[in-house]
Length: 122
Image (tube, rainbow, N blue to C red; front, side, top):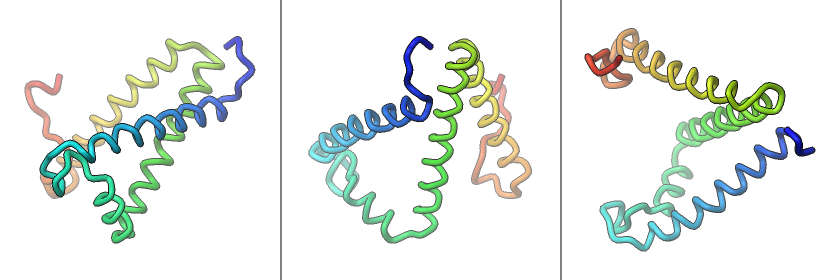
């Protein structure tokens, strides 16, 4: 709260750090032997798949926008209110994701997606 950084600047810095760290991790994972085209994680193959599928590009964009919005709102909430409110926001997000998984499983008509209600759902 005591710093003069705007929420946009904080989220942008978080994003740059995340991209930088993941680039290093993906570079290392490319050289570890595995079942993904000979690597533990083949980012080049992932980029090739991304280039060949318009629907995959749309979903990646939707994911990036939703993560950006969530982080921006989280920083804004923590700046205006407190870190406790941001933590409550994170918990609510988890509950909403779980609710969407339940609705997708039972109302979607296809049990391939979503998650069923089990004794361990509590």
